[in-house]
Length: 418
Image 1 (tube, rainbow, N blue to C red):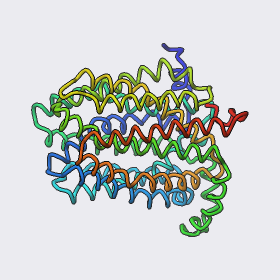
Image 2: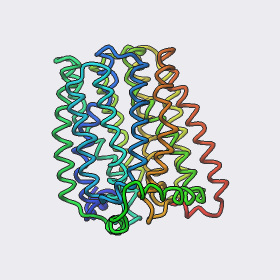
Image 3: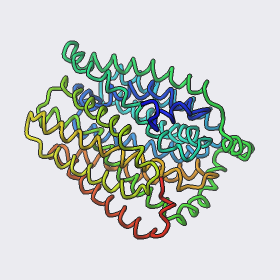
Image 4: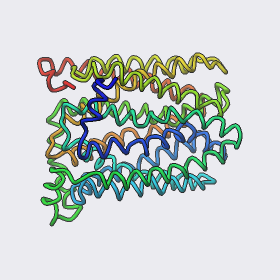
């Protein structure tokens, strides 16, 4: 086990990659403890499926605004400083709001503040990768996912806590725990990292420019994006996966508790199984895919996600076994579809303009994703399976897009190599 490629990579990490990866469990563990119950928590205060979907959509619209500014903010303040400031705003403060929330307004306020996460999503990713050996990126991203999956070993505690103390007190406690752990994480990451070489260059170049003057240069960057087919294909796939993640993250627990009649205190079984499956997949299979043309394994991942969603909508009431099978298939498919796409996104964009290209692409991705929280909420009020039918259709489009990408870039597979 000590010679496993992922273990070797973890030991070899230095500098910013080490600071980002080693502290990530302090964010991933609390997030994965409360996330499966977030929608059920809102239902407990009387919110409807439509209101929950509306909060998701409005939060995403706010994220578009912050993502549009993220590249310019990251270039002017630097990757490291931006990450600290906006992590504290976008996670520490919302955790406190969620802990004391009582109605639609408080949940909406938390979503609006949490939308600032799009700034730190840009800056933290650049802090992680810019001075990191490209050959290590798949393993580095694998460890970022694994850090969150470590919640698997404590998430089973959530169910008994809900059974003993009820849903609302337990969730309030988890949000307060998240506030403490995440705040410590942000401070430690800042202490263990330094500004990247490219970050220092961009800080110097933009030092005398007002923030909105930096934004005025975006049309030139957009033209650069449109001239890169690889980047455009990657953006299309990110849109599809983002929509799917929004739907699954918001409506899975609602479907399971309200339609399948699985008690809330049993929900922790499924994040546990999902996390363990993904951990095994990362260690047993991902190292073998690390240097392949990523598109073909991603097709398999997309087909797996379709199968998992199809099983989910066909699960009989109170059928724990079928629901577990759907969960395990999804968990085995996510690493292939998501982790390889993360690296593909980084290697297909110009390293000198990563901050602004990332900002522009995510603005487009979020703009196209934002209506789907509301759309899925309306579909869920008709039938709680319909959001997942929509997921199946979108994942099918993703497979078509991957095949088109392969055909359009024949002879240039090195551009898509992991």
